[in-house]
Image (tube, rainbow, N blue to C red; front, side, top):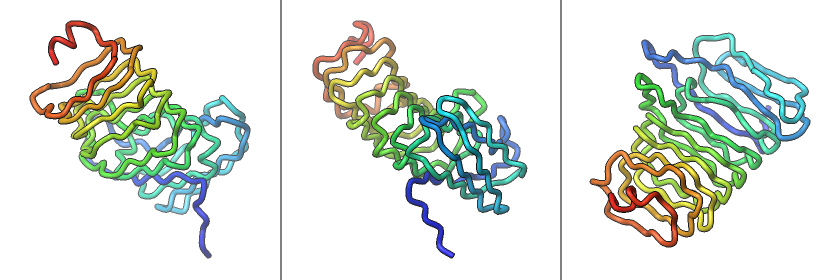
Length: 219
């Protein structure tokens, strides 16, 4: 039979050996509204089906040491998948999660590294407030121009090439890797803005933004 994966997110995990922190495929889901959460892991045909209340976090255990594709249905009614960094993701297709408020795929630990992340989709998630892809191998531009509610962005230790923020956004914290291109316009609420290095910066569009004077001088 054919499974309909509309209104779903797809997470493709990897199974690294000997890493610290160790992989953990448990997922913590917080619904935006009352709903039935349906999760399917194709590694061992593991299903989770539970009626969940809005605003409460539900831990979806995964009883195996390895995982491949994970599908979560009803994605448009979910506001958080919790910390996904220990899934060591290769792909995360999250465009259907239109109520998503945070996206945590990276990890700030000095021992953490995910060299596998190649695909990250969050094109239709206007409520996103936080994105964390620290210490991953993600090496594409980040087009955040539709994310007006974004407050925090962390890309340190990644290979992100460029970042374009939403015009008139409410960005407060941006801790970035050594990107080559930045597009910033009418960002008036920035409290903390850093780049790992300015040596790669070849393109900068900067208009009517508030950043601490010392940081502006450094640019």
